[in-house]
Amino acid sequence: MIRSHFIAFVLASAVPSVANAQNLPARDIADQAQTLKATQVPPVEPPASPEAADAAKPPSSGKADLVVAPIPVSNPATGTGLAGAAVLFYNPNKASQPWVSGIGGGYTSSDTWALGAFHTMSLAHDRARIMAFAGYGDAHLKFYGIGPDAGEAGVHVDINDEAFYGMVDAEVRIFNKGFLRHLYVGAKLTYLDIKTTLDFPPPVSRPDLDPPALERKSTLAMIGPAFTFDSRNNSTNPSKGVYVTGSLLYGASWLGSDFTNHKLEFGANAYFPLGHKGTVLAIRKQLCGASDDSPYYGVCLFGAQGDLRGYETGRYRDGASWALQAELRQHVAGRFGAVAFAGAGGIAEDTKAIWKHSTVLYSGGVGLRYLASRSSNVNLRADIAWGKDGAMFYFGIGEAF
Image (tube, rainbow, N blue to C red):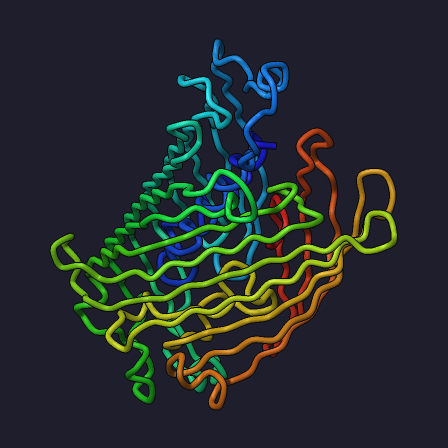
């Protein structure tokens, strides 16, 4: 399960993470990375006896294990292509969590490409977990402007983003027993250096489609508190439990940032096994809020991380976004399964305006699943979703949330 989840992370994010800095933003990397380091092996109660302690010992760290895997990817923002990863698993301190280092990359039909490397490690008997990621990419994307009217108009300019992205997330577990043993708290630092060029000048009637020069070549460095709560029974394909993440990051000029904005991000997933064998109800809530001095690529982008499927990430963007969705997952036969999902969300000028002045967007869809690895419980995913602007297709590894 550990190996497959790290491979899933690299394959799913190798292209979108860096190359899609404005349409599939840095937060995708941070959140996915946080998922990995917080869910590989949940904290356990101290063993009641020496015999139990021996049984609970982690595998020997004698051999490093290298895994290489390719996978096709497809999403509305970057197109269809192929990603790959090489991941090394090793355990120098013989802890319950292995150290994992890897590289990944990919290329899509939009001439978008990216390369990245990551490292994760567990220290002090898994009391502390650290994740680091760095990568570079080049993406060809569409920019529709900011606000609900811009997204609904459907007028865009083609832009080219060259970006370097780095992230470090360090969290510690405070409690060893009880409900709060699933909680990790700490800090997150992100660094994004981006250069944006327009393939063609925007229409005269839409000057807002030409981002300010400062934002088109700029650096956004942010730091702030973060937390993870994870009680899922499986990190790649859970059937019960809760997974919650949150962060509040601030632009820091002392880190080289050109902006001093702030950004709140919160996500919560819950999984419920239903009576019928192989039936799971999954629910996700998402909230984002960005200050009004954020650059165009640092605001809240509707559709990121599958919130919601059926919308091109970044077509609808503003100072705040929210989403609530449900997915019914059903094992059909053998390695095959099926899902049906629906949800609602929206964007608003800021978090205060969400409840009264949101532009509400709906979507729904169906999908097929194929169990690529029985031992790791990892699915290949193919979804078709219908949103306000039509149908969109997704293909990748692992569940949408």
